[in-house]
Image (tube, rainbow, N blue to C red; front, side, top):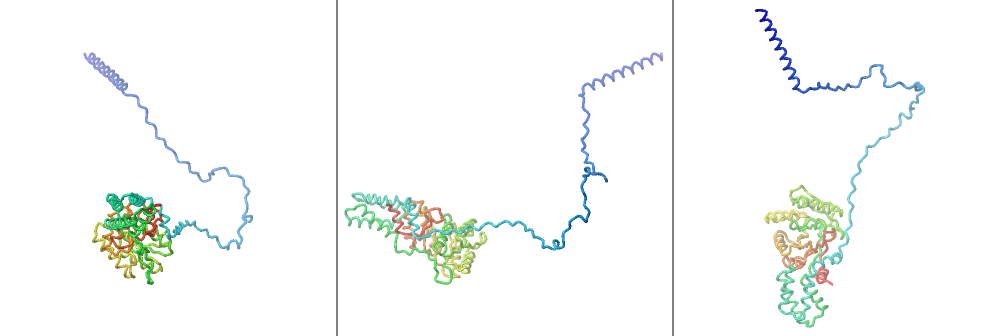
Length: 407
């Protein structure tokens, strides 16, 4: 019996072993074979040379003794060593000083530009006056032509009445007679008895002081720079004062204009006190013995009271050195009647002595010359007729009227 039990146990153990081998073989078949991990590549540092090792086989070269080597003499040893200078970066060349063209007759040379924009006014008037019968409708058309050109209501009525009277007396009218008649009446309207010279002599030992005022956007700072060229062209020495401290680019712009004609620009910190800059400008002009000091001022109109206080302060500070010789108001001719509103505001702040009309070549409303003179009672002294540096010209009534009428 024991033998049977032992045989059964042995049989069970054998069956278990066999089944274990089968299961393990099945598990091994289900797993994919995996490659053994690659050994990390180790780059060994280059071997250090050991004492006695040489990089290469020594070459056979003749060797000299110390007696055979040429040594420097005593004279060579005490020579002054040669200094080797560091390279110096060359300074940027100073801008070349330009020589502006003379201002005499400049408006005549620019007449073609003026005629292109203003010819419609002169041609329109001549065409209407050349009609055989000048009835009321024709005279109304003449009035409309003048008003459209911004001559103004009162000057227009005055001109029409004078033309009516002279045409009635003249009777028969030839084209040449009409041209002469219209030229004379327009000259009378523009005015030939004004003193249109910019005052550049103070009558004292101090420079003449010219203050330039106007709304930002009218070309005020550019006009100040061009005016410096006009004065330099006429033989005057100029100092520029950048008192428009509220516009960041104004001082840089004015300084660039000054450098082109050799005029010094006095400037202060951004958003600084304009009166302080104006004071320093006149002080510098006196020290340099300049003929004229041009002061560019701020042109903010959004607070009328602030503008009045600011310009009034600049005027008072400048007059500590001497009288203010000229106050020029810069107006944009293309704004027409809106320019008259600006003129009234500035006239309340400072005593305007002259007018600069810019962009006169870009508008057909040349009658603003007449209107602004009537409004302020001061003459137009300078006109801008382009974007070139020498396109600012002294105003000449004859050349202006000739451009209006055309050839």
